[in-house]
Each structure stands twice: as structure tokens, then as C-alpha cells.
Image (cartoon, one colour):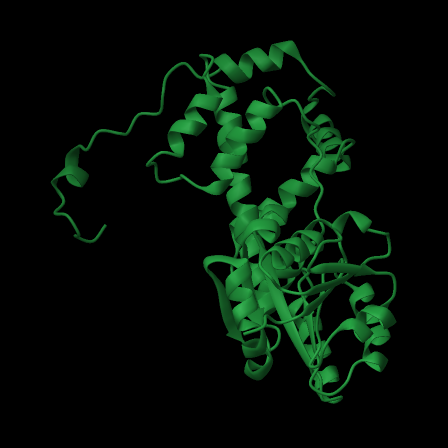
Length: 331
């Protein structure tokens, strides 16, 4: 049985990786990008320079994957594609679009007799190249046409039809929020390891943790890999992101669902970018005003902070009436 032909628009890290993987597995692929990619040409992968040519090369019903940045560009590309597509054709958004936008896009294309699939794709460029994790939302009739493709280009058990339009990108959004929380926890752990009184072999510790420990994970594996490659934490402290998890925090506020760890992880990203923090200056000014506290560092106060407490906190002894009271009795 012949394999499904697909089109891929956006041959960046994710789109190119998926196109190459699919072609190597025998899927005919037509790719297109704003920038020429002759390096991608192979027996099953042909790169064209226009939407018109891409659509003309695809067999009906056409399946067109979009791997471009989220936002207005997705709507613009759909508008360009729509006049060249026909009833029954399928557009798959494999980027990190907002789930509400995906529901709207699916409804608009449905009016034209076309399908829209929102495909949350995880695993990074490496996953796109060798085996991804797909969270797929959309009409079952459309998803079924691509089920074999998803299964074969995913890692084992790495494909799930999550439900109707919007669910794929929503599940991926929650996934990204969890990712942020995990990254923050691992990062804080690294901070604690580097501040211990003795010098610790962080690379060896990370290697150990990935062998049977509760926190073993791909992220811990990546932490060790990058720590070894960079010979320590020798990179800028500024953390960049594309903002998707901000949407999840906003959703949580609307839904009244508490997500304190994920929310704080987003705030910590902002802190990494704040090189001249106004909030810190404001606090210093108020402390100077009410207590005469100095601006900037002060050796005497630092000494007091370290040595002002002589002993550790001690629990009071249970004496008298409190000690004789039966457990659970009224105060």
C-alpha cells in the first residue's frame, strides 16, 4: 500500500527534521520555505518555492503541515492556502499555536469543507528528526487519514488523538507548563549544589541521578550533557522564551485553577532578564527611609546576617497543663 503524501511549509529545525524523517520512511514529501533549501532534496523529498507549486504537486485529499511560528503568520498562511485547496483537504498546524486560535481556525475551514488538525509536537528538533511525540486534536475523519503517518514518525506510543479541535494544542500547552516547572526545579537544585561548602562533582551527580533515582529524566540527561559541553555554567543567565506558558497562566486565572509552581517558573524567567531591577531599587529606598538602611552592600550588615543568631531554633519543653493534656483534647 502506498504511503500518504504530505506537504510541509516551514523547513526550519522542526519542519525540516519531520520532512527528512518522513521521506526516509518512504513518505512522498513536498516542502516549501521562504528560504531555498536545496540541501533537503532527496528521492522522496522535493522542495518548491511557492504555495501554488506545492499544492499542485500534492495528491487529493491534500495534507499540508505548517511548521511556522505561532500567531498572525498562521492565519496569513491559511488565507494564502485556502484558494488553492479543495473540499476534503487537510491543514495540520504542528507549531505551538494557542488552542483557542486552533478552534477558531478549524471552524472557519469547516465552513469551506476542509479540515484543520492542531498537532502539538514535542521532542524538539531531535524528535522531529528521529521520532516525535504528537498530541493531535481535530475531526476523527481527518486524523484517521494521517494516523499511520503519525504512528510511524513518532516514538513508540508517541501519538494520541486527544479529542476535537483545540485539544492537541491545549494538551501541548499544559505539557510546556509542566516543562517550565521541571526546568526551574532542576535549575534551583544546580544552584544548591554549587553553593555547598565542599566542591561537588556536578557532572557525576547528574549521571548518578539518571540511574535509578526518582528524578531521572531526559531533562537531567540534558543538564549533564550541556554542563559537560560548556565546562560548567559558563553561559549567559538571560533566559529567552516564546511566551506560550504565559497563555497557560492566563488560562489558569480564567479557569480559577491554581498553578503556583508553573506561574512562579514564568516569573523567574522574567527575573533572569531584569538587569537593572526597579523593584529592588524601590525596596532599598523604602528601607533607607524607614530604618536608615544603607544603599548597596555593607560589610557590617553582612556579618550580622551571618552571625547574628547564636543558636538554632529550639522547641519549647512540654510542661504543666499542656504536657498533661490528652492528645486531641480541646485547647
